Length: 231
Image (cartoon, rainbow, N blue to C red):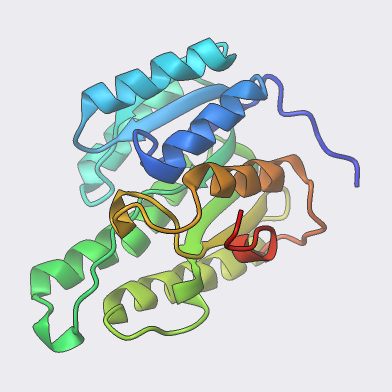
């Protein structure tokens, strides 16, 4: 497979101040990409991540606050980005929340936050960014979007939805490749830092963007196919 060079590409990663988003930003920086990092709550974490991106080789790392549950904030964030950049080569929709709890104990608020962040916000942000996006959209989903798990009822629903959205969007967009990278259990704040290290997941995300795997638009990229748990 001939892998594309990512040097000079502009990459936007949502939820990139921590975890998988942050590790992906670092790897894209090593490839010589310009990074657009979004955070929701912790501006200092995002600023620190941006600083490290620059030291790793990113020509520029731009930080913008993004709350995907807030329509006005989505539109405002994209406006800020469009004023600074005339395109986004690669969009990585990574922001997500998870709740492990029996369904009968979940509250309306807990259900709403997962649906809004994991699905609705991802879809709206993709729509808002679409005029800028040139090459690739990578949606981060989960093995819980392919197989159901107890105590993850709402979460599973949102991740099944992201996969459906990815497949349908791929059929509509002829000039943009759309993929769904499905995580297994990854060691992040969301999982209490148990599982595959986020830097391993970041490798799969960057390789997907590079064209390192034989894929058609709309395809699933299952992280566990590329690493066994011992890695």
